[in-house]
Image (cartoon, rainbow over the protein chains, first blue to last red):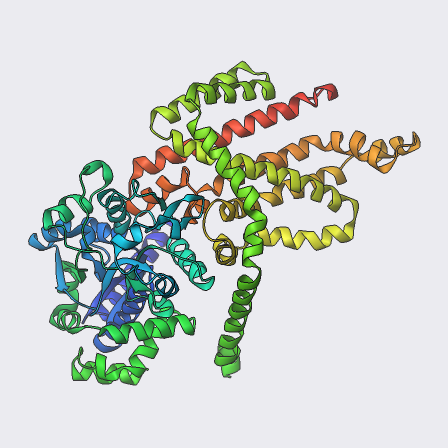
Length: 337
Length: 294
């Protein structure tokens, strides 16, 4: 046989074999889940992977990501299929539009109970200065929280670039008039930078003031104290100003933090691939706050990777997850552990 | 048979206790010596803050004029001076002036520190095979270990900001100049060295008048690589809170702003090329007596 004929025949053979293999996996099909770069999201992605694979026979792939990049990818290209922990305040308008067009589904509007974003100080600081229970009280004392590179100003630690909370905190800085009160933003650069600056300060007994969120292992481990941020500044002020970049809105006003909206979001493709079983599982999947905090502290204490923590969760909290899945699926998952 | 399919792993709890033990001992170290180490680096921090403030607050014509003058002094090449001035004007016009000045401040200090620390170490390595053998693995580690691995202990000791950023850049950018200084000096013509001994040169005289001048091309190749690597670390430095061109690039990465990332990236490339060409031309000029160009 000529060389060309050999190549063509082998190509056809390979294609037929791969066609068979994809047919063999029918039942649920291929799903991609966003594996986002923080502990609780990683845990949720790994638990979803085990449950969908062992309980419902899906072929699951985890794709690394973060809030905005993963959401944009889902919106524009329809991949990944599931965003387990999407902090929806980041892109509420875009999400509503996509849901309206049927491309995405906000399948579960409260996958974790007991969430909160805001500004925190270490418990040692509160002990030394018991009057610092509100954001207003802290903002009046920039001298207690010196900026690492300019001790004449107070240091306000914000989120890394690219996180939605970076924009919000920068607008809050303007809205609360922090520059005039003698404060300067500390650009943390990355999640590791933000975590590291808080950890270093608390370990050394220094004061620290900045943004963080719960449930997280750091808040639980260091028992950080959330500050009372006062009154809600109105929906327009938040959605049309505080969440936008500084150049898009020059008049933010001070406000408390919005109630955190965290959704599990899926693409339409997931609805078609995983069907009613998959949608029902995600609808029912709700982590109670203490369970999630407990798992996060477990992950931190034992330096467990999210995959190992997922197995630990499935073993220890049977009473929680068996409520999310059908009886048959629960049996299959228990058998695989 | 399981021995062959699954590699034997250290017992789970023992591994965990080992990791926690290391963490705990580092935490104690940080608690006892952290303040002292921070205090040790304070002068460097103040210097960096002062330099950045000066560069950012001085009127831009003066700053560009000074850079043009430095380019001229280093290279005596009109083309390079025009290129330098034009690049900075374009960077400023596209709104990247402040970030660019912050990056120039920290990178020039980092490069200087690397050269001042690296060349003596390279000279030491060239004198003794034993020293070379001990230092080479350290250099390998500095170049390959992922930056955040050594940044985590540094952040615990010094917090985030300019000093950890400088340390990160220096750790990554130091090895090239050390290796190439060592290589250059070792490769100096043995006969030239013998001739200088025959004329009664002391070791110091040999080093200053024979070895270093003859190994300058290699040393300057090392300096060039160090500059390139220092600028490549700008983004990682931004990840631990250093202001500069890296911050918009991080924003661009997280939000998929292609144009922003490209513009700031190209600004870093422009800085690298300017730094490099000026130092290379300076190197060529001080070797003109050898009659060879490059």
